[in-house]
Image 1 (cartoon, rainbow, N blue to C red):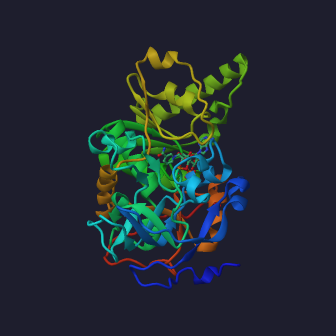
Image 2: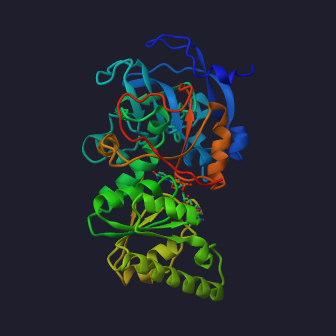
Image 3: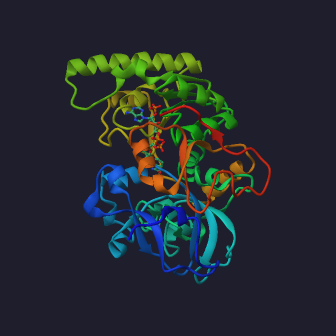
Length: 418
Ligand SMILES: NC(=O)c1ccc[n+]([C@@H]2O[C@H](COP(=O)([O-])OP(=O)(O)OC[C@H]3O[C@@H](n4cnc5c(N)ncnc54)[C@H](OP(=O)(O)O)[C@@H]3O)[C@@H](O)[C@H]2O)c1
C-alpha cells in the first residue's frame, strides 16, 4: 500500500497510546547499495517500550553518515548486530527531537509530553562497565539506529530512557534534531580523549562537515587555535565564521592523499606534498598542531601523523576514505606521538555538551531542512559530499521554525554547497 507522506505529521493516537503501524524509511539486507535505492519508505509495526525504554514521537530527525554505511552494507552489514536479527529491518536515524509518547516500566525521570533530544549510545544497565568505567566499554554497547533498528526516520522511535536529554527550548525541532551524533562525538574526542586546552593548536580535517563544524566551535570557545581543511573556499569562509584561525583548501594539496598501493617513487612524491601541507598548517597556526582531529582515514592519516607536533596526539573516530591505514611509523615513535581512538560519547558527556547548546555557546550548523519524502536523497547528498554542516528532516513538524518555546539564536545556516 502506498504511504501518504503528507499525513506523516499527523498521529492518530493521544500521548500514552501508540498506533499499530507507522511510516518509516527502511533498509533491508537484500537491497544494500546506494542510499537513494537502499532506503525505502514502508509501513511497519510500532514497537512497544520494554522496561526502561521510551517511545518518542519524532518531530524532526538528523541525517548522519552512519546510515550511508548502513545502506551500502559496508564495511559490515548492520544486520549482524543488536536487535536486527529479531526485526529484520533497519530504521536508521541516530538523531531526533521529539515528544515522549509512551514510557516503559521503571522510567521515572521522563514523562509523557516531555520535549527531548536523543543521544545515540545504548548499553545494558546490567554491565558493570556502565556503572564505573564507561558505557562505551560495555560488551552490550551499541550505537542506536546503526547497530540497532528503531531510529528516527519514522513517526516513532524507540530508545533507552538514559538516551534522553532536554530539548533546548530556544531551538526549533529541526535545529534540535541536527547536532547530537556529530557534536557529542567531537566533544568526547576533544574535551575528554585529548583534553583540549586554551592555547592548543589543532588541525581539523573536513572542518565544514558534520563533525568539523562542532570541532571548530569547541576549539574556539576553549581558546584553542584551529586550522580547518576543506575542499572549497566557500566552506573555508563558513568555518572562519565558526572561529577557525584559518583554512586550507585540500585541492591545493591533492597529491598528499594516500590511495594505498603506491610505488616507492609515487610514495616519495606523495610524502613531499604532505611536507608542503605541514608547512602550510604551521604557517596558519604559528607552529605545528598539538592535536589532529581525524575521521578521513586512509587518504589523510599518514599526513596527520607527520604533521602533528612531537608528543602531539592524533585523535580518530572514523575513516570515510578507507579504514586500512598505513603510514611511516618512524614519525610516530621517534617524535613520541600518540594515536587515540574515540567513539561517540557517554550520557554524561552528551549532557555536558547539550548544556553548551542550551547556553548558545555552541550552535547547530544547518545546511538543508528537507521533508520526510527526501530521506533517501538526503543520504545520497552526504554520500556524494555535496553538503556542509548538517541536514535535518521534518517528520512531525509541518514546517520550519516550529518547537521554539524561548528566545535565542537558532542554528547557523550554511548557505553554500550543492
Ligand atoms: N565513531 C563515531 O562515533 C563517529 C561519529 C561521527 C562520525 N563518524 C564518522 O566520521 C566520518 C565523518 O563524519 P561526518 O559526519 O563529519 O561526515 P561529513 O559531514 O561527510 O564530513 C566529513 C568531511 O570530510 C571531508 N572529506 C571527505 N572525504 C575526504 C577525503 N577523501 N579527503 C579529505 N577530506 C575528506 C569532507 O570535507 P571537505 O570535502 O570540505 O574536505 C567532508 O565534509 C564518517 O566516516 C562517519 O561515519 C564516526
